[in-house]
Image (cartoon, rainbow, N blue to C red; front, side, top):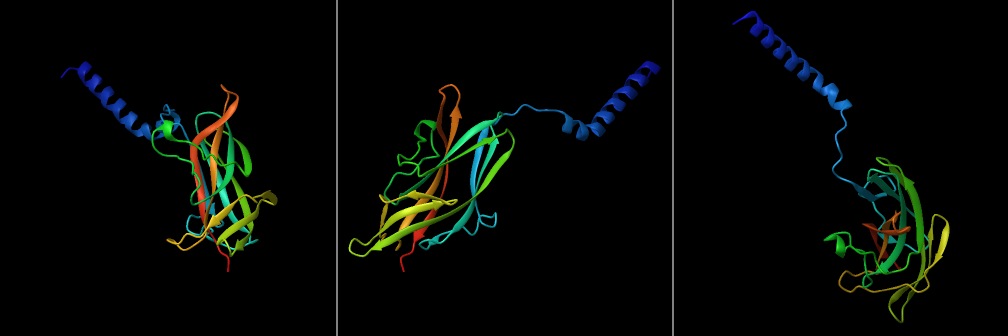
Length: 204
């Protein structure tokens, strides 16, 4: 092997070793193109966990959770969260299936929460809520008066829940639909995300 070939082999091995040694450091500097863009939406319990959500609800008792949004869209986004409530027969939002089939609930929003969230950041807020309601023994149903969310009282006089004989409870669903501002239409559109709490409204 000639001196030139030795030199080429030496330089090749040196470059390969140098690249292998430097690759962990280079990986921190290199910016790879992002291929997925999405938004995260979640609820955590009062301890910032997922194992102690409110369930058996008592009239005029405060309950606390955390609502969070994670922006992975590649740009700063303006979000709107619509807070809604439904009984077991009313329409729920859909977040799965083909995009054309993902629709919000047709129920009106009781409360709106807005947030600007920068790309690759998380926004989170504590929520404290309570319900004022009564039990109508003649009709065997729960009749709501109001929802108080973060010290704001909202009228719920048109809301009722009937007894679920199969599951043996008065079950309601406090849920949160995620909407996002669309600059092209200058309006908010359903962002195909929702989370909620299943609640048993105790009457005794």
